[in-house]
Image (tube, rainbow, N blue to C red; front, top):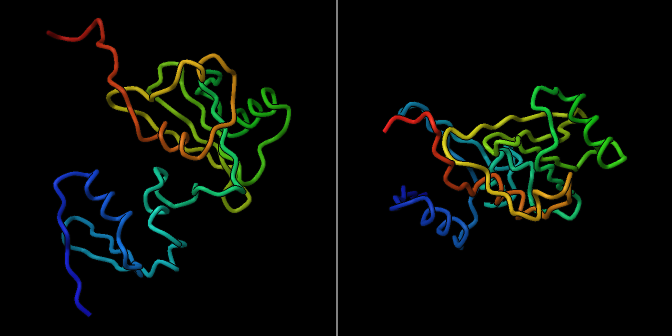
Length: 173
């Protein structure tokens, strides 16, 4: 079977091509240090569609599904809290515990860090992400709420769309 490697001028072109591809892909190749290559069938990785590969969390865990619920906590969390502390924040604000197929996105007041709380294999997981430059992009109405349910598209938008950060008063000119 013939295969070819496509090259794209930018990331947007690459994503557009993937999403409009008429053929069904059957495997994923991982390349490490430019030379070691590993090929995995998509079923082994739990991938069912191209959109699973585009999830910011990388594993395809958070896909657009009516079974999943997404919640945004724009500025209410102490980032020193561990899993139990974040679960406590959910109970305090929502009045109910964290449940499977729910994803809770906590944004630090600086808008440079987020924590993502969810269940995987029956256990709660926390992922911490920090931006080296820029800020996570929140809307004014979101900042006024202690928490709010958001659609899957908005969840992914927050994790992928960033805005320029404010210049530090200590920056060198």
